[in-house]
Amino acid sequence: MKLLDYLRVLARQLIDNDYSEETLKDISLVEIDLHQIKEELNFIEGSELLELEEIDMIRALLAYLLMRETDLHEDDIYSFIFSKGKQIIWN
Image (cartoon, rainbow, N blue to C red; front, top):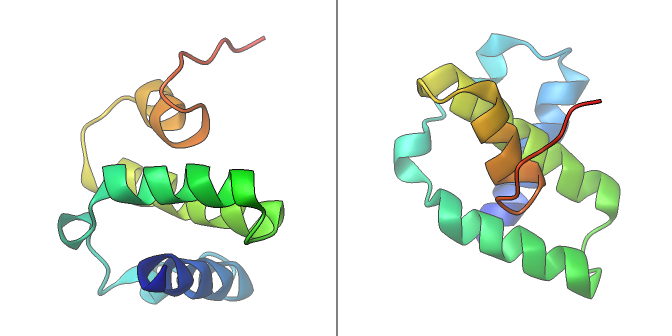
């Protein structure tokens, strides 16, 4: 939960700083186990330990970091982060 708390604070700082790249200059996904974070987010979402807004902020932060640091396609990133691995159908 400590990592999620850190990501929640970081996501809030990013929003408060108008998405300034400076906020994330020292953050790297290499240090983060994305599968563990995803499992924890899914658990927390079901248990209502955090508000849905905070969970969405963390998911958006992770998606942003994945887009910045990997060559994964955006649809794959959104699917991994937001839809529990299911393919997203865009209308």
